[in-house]
Image: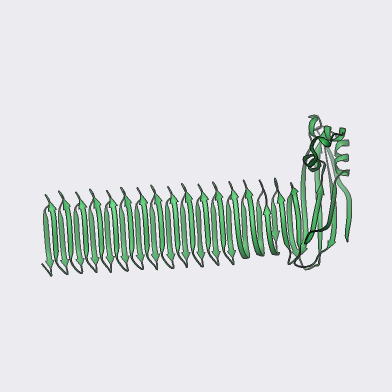
Length: 427
């Protein structure tokens, strides 16, 4: 059963020989909680809200503008708007002359259609706004373009496809599969897993009680409070966010990546991205190039691969590996071993509880307060060491070597290097 209502309108104006008229259409149908609503191939601004009722109420507000007032009236009178049973739920039908022409093409050959689509003097434009109420627990399948979509206070399975329009979810739950382009997606307080693909559009997430997967390009990604795992696969997009309860995997390029408070493992692949991360609960793996990498407070191990990237790493809870080139490296407070390979990098290391293996060239290398053994290979590098707990091996050339407070043996291979050593407990 469905009820089909049409209410006439509202407003007619004439400005500079251009007419504008609007009309409202309504439809209602009984609907079980947990059902599905289908809405296909619309071009409208759409608002859908959940209400504590076992029915669907839909309203369409259509505004037309043209130089021909008769065409406006005929267009509005030819629109069909209804709710009907369909598959495992109900379907909302909005048939306009524009949609019928898209479906049937040249078969719509009457003078009315020729006037609308081929007579430049008519010059018709339109705006469609849909407002829909569904039960609190209800699923949605939508295909739309050239309009914004807003969905509030509904729990169900959501399958949305939109183009050139913003999408907003607020206080919803269930499972979400969403595709959009050229406009922002904003999801707030969603109880369940989400998957978002937004080409050329920004994405903002807040309060996601589940796993989240995001693919986008050329516009920013922001997130806050994801109570699950997070995967972001972006192209030319900045990525900024905090509070991820499980693992976090991020891929992007050419824009900054800034991440805080990940309780699980963090992996970042950022081609030509500056990277800043802090408060990571497990290990962190970071790959980037040509921009600065800054890491602070990682409870697990750290693995950094950078090309032409400066690196600052502080307060790392396990073994650390850093490889980069041509930019300075600063490392502080490592709970474990350090392996560092910095071609043409200045190196400054302080506070490593385990062993330190450092390789660089042409720039100064300093290492202080190392609890284990130290091995340094520095081609044409000045070297300064202090407070080393165990044995030391140093190799360099043409630049000075200074070492003090060595807790074990020291061996030096310094071609054309001056050497000053003080306070060696071993040989």
